[in-house]
Length: 196
Image (cartoon, rainbow, N blue to C red; front, side, top):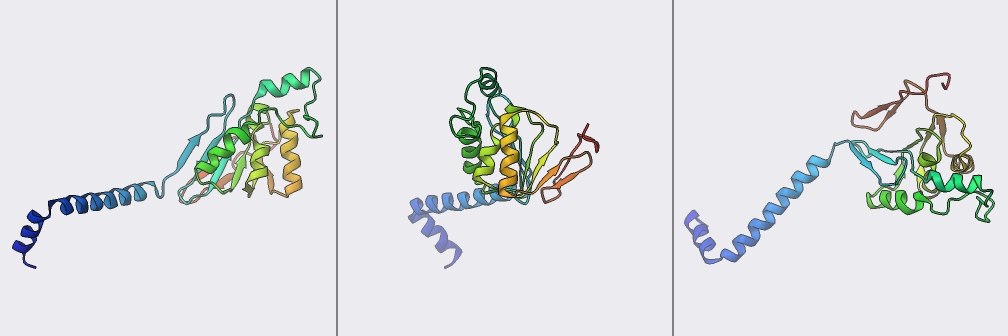
């Protein structure tokens, strides 16, 4: 078909020209979006109320969850009042498990199937509360913990799950590095070697 034939066909079929143009534009846009998201470090902050839950996804897809949120007031109100903090199960479970309600659904929506690292900043209930549910629902390659003891019920449950599920566990110390692939490296700044 000569150039003049192409122009004649275009003039005779404007609807198909528009459809093909949109399809080609969509394919090009999809390619640009895929290329721009590949190789990027992504940090997602989850709404967990008080405390933190942060997913860091490296350029190669390796994942690190920092903290799991929690509800400080609920846990300690039950402990202080002498209430049954085990909910009759023999092990402590919060009445409103932020891990089950917020963290796990958010991770699944993001397509996370495995967590390469779960890092705990400290063992207060509002940071560790959702992590036991995470360990019950995801394969975890390593748990990093500063190792500063705290009487948080969820912290005790987390350590129990680490032991029962034989999840690799390490104390986080200054200078330790976590490689998230693609040049993304997380370095632990605190605590020092002596745990202080």
